[in-house]
Length: 240
Ligand code: SAH
Image 1 (cartoon, rainbow, N blue to C red):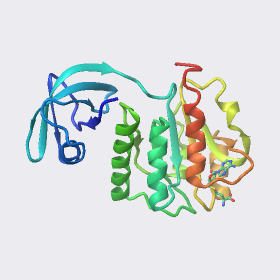
Image 2 (image 1 turned 90 degrees about the horizontal axis):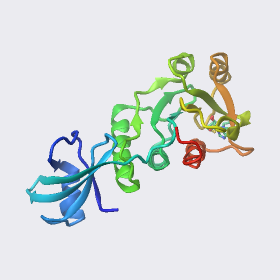
Image 3 (image 1 turned 180 degrees about the horizontal axis):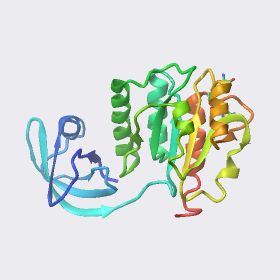
Image 4 (image 1 turned 90 degrees about the vertical axis):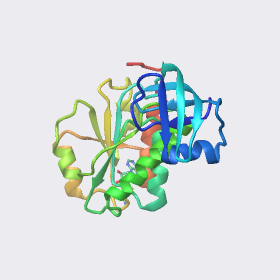
């Protein structure tokens, strides 16, 4: 696969421009030259073969040679609602779930949560989504949604997806994926200190189903990745 660059405006027509970090990455890191061919994506689901036509100090101009619709998404939408861990573990989680094809991440605010999902932290995570998407070939970006109180999320019924709460006493994950539900899955993962009894009760009262990820207690990011990896391994078994 050629080197991939992200264009933060929808690509229409036969030219595109890279600015800011992406332009710097192309010139200073990848040392690309006028005439080189690269791949562009704009998050719309397509990727574009493009030739560099000019390089200026802060921008790069390209001409589009070909547009291809290439989906590297999961066969069903997967949303993870996660009480984010702190610092590097949060960054690592987002990188890995992007690679594994997760559709949407909803940071949840829980009673025992340790990391406040403030806007600056979410912006850093969005940058991490871009980096991981460039590397793994995804043409749609993992969406990082606005943070929600866990109990509000549990009470909201505005989804057709199968709703799961990761809890060691639940049923095995495999039961919910065979066959994968076409309307998707939303799975909630608690903080290091666990969901409170009241949070679990709110989820169960609203039809969320407890799912077990095995007999060991996993860290938040391991639990998120376990679900995402399972979903990713279903690809090709039931395309919907
Ligand atoms: N100290 C907590 C553990 C929290 S682990 C306790 O003893 O309950 C962080 C979150 O990961 C949990 O809230 C749960 O959502 C998820 N998790 C961890 N291990 C799990 C397992 N084996 N099965 C299902 N969910 C798990």
